Length: 222
Image (cartoon, rainbow, N blue to C red; front, side, top):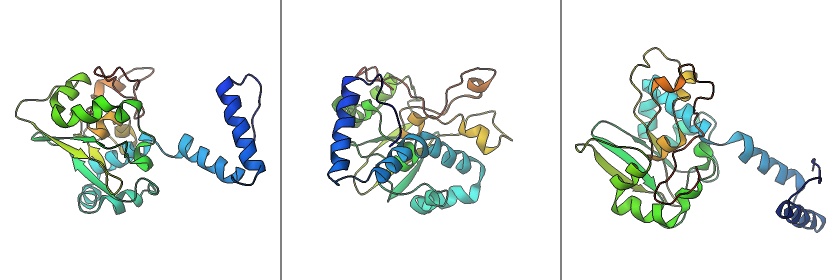
């Protein structure tokens, strides 16, 4: 494997030592390990889910397919595999807002969202999302009208969810690439909303799909 051993932290050095030992004993194929690292560092992540959402916003036929068979629709864009074998799309509307949690562990749709954030795996989020979803949303800075129902979905090893947030106002005529920049990771979990159009207006570092709101209840990082 490529890379330098200079300036490694103690933990890095231990990981490299264990890795070298496993490779030397033939337990790990270095090429396969490199491919796995490449996949989760560059090929999967919230940017994939953002592209799915943006296409759903701009392509009625794709949105209909997503509603009927999210697994196949998402796979048609090249996003499939481990932790995303069975997908369901949850479409937010003014009447219903969807929130996803895994009450048992941290089941999460890796192909479209990447690895789960720390707060998603935390006990406070996993318990409060079920018993006080509106309070959890408030912790993330999301305030919904009282008339909007909140539907909580428990992700499992057999079934993963992708929330399709409502398309922001003022985006008529936008192409999918531009729209994808308004789709945050949290909006596809249900703990956030898509960004307003102002978020892209002249901002040098506008938030993207990898950004997430802090969890005030747990203090967990984004």
